[in-house]
Length: 411
Picture: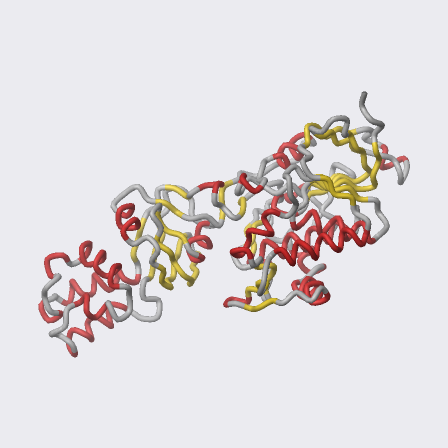
């Protein structure tokens, strides 16, 4: 026999970064809050992020660090809850952290400290958290209930646990998105949005390695494990960071960043020597170091294994020749390729390894102030399920904290 339905003020679907922040914020306002998580543990993505050190925010968070079809949407939440607010919380818990390049902040010890902090906040505020709760249905109890009384339950949530049906006045979807399904990623948030006639923009994998099926595949396999700092450009965007060759293609921070802009069929441009005009440099070297081989010159700036691969591609017949025997035109062409190596990835690695999902619940239908659906009272969306995706470097966590906090003020 089914148990009597338990009523809460707020039910949050998902115990990730955004969901836990929202839960603690709402409960501190005196709201009775339940968090439902389908996985066996909470905060799995927090624990694996940043190599287990959690890149929890960035000193320089701006709306320009986010990709969305509605670029102004994120401004309200980001201004309401800033990196300094989260840093203050981290410091209050005595968590030791460090700044890495580009303003990225990481735990010195373990991401477990960030999760413990969030769970501590929830426990102090009296939040109930249940794991192993896969949602089977979300129902509307009374479409007009929110208008009739402040205490009426509006939504019912059924779980794949014997007898568990719960109701609430405010339902918060913090279910994440499609990225890394092994950590709990799913499209349930999009299903709930569509159930209530909210549009969902086209989704694709973001912050993800790129793969090759042409001549580059064996090159990447041979260079697997090699990293170097380069500039990579695509669709008018460019980033300078480390590139990593893998047995499947290209990865590393710079590739993850550009993958947010790359689309199937696009080429990417890699500047292997971003600090110099390679054509001018090579022509000058020909005049001053004409007896040296080109690979000898390049080995001082690039890994020998990479230079060997470039030599096989661009100057195989002159491999044993001194610079003096290269024509100016040939050297200039090699220099241009060093600064603009155009490659065409065949695909990304997809959601299996993607750190974020680009696209999501269309934010034109969501209040930027409260995160509530404009045409569906009491239904809120926060975090990655929305069409807001940050660059690599702590920006997605800051969006989780900011959107969770903002919704927590109003649920």
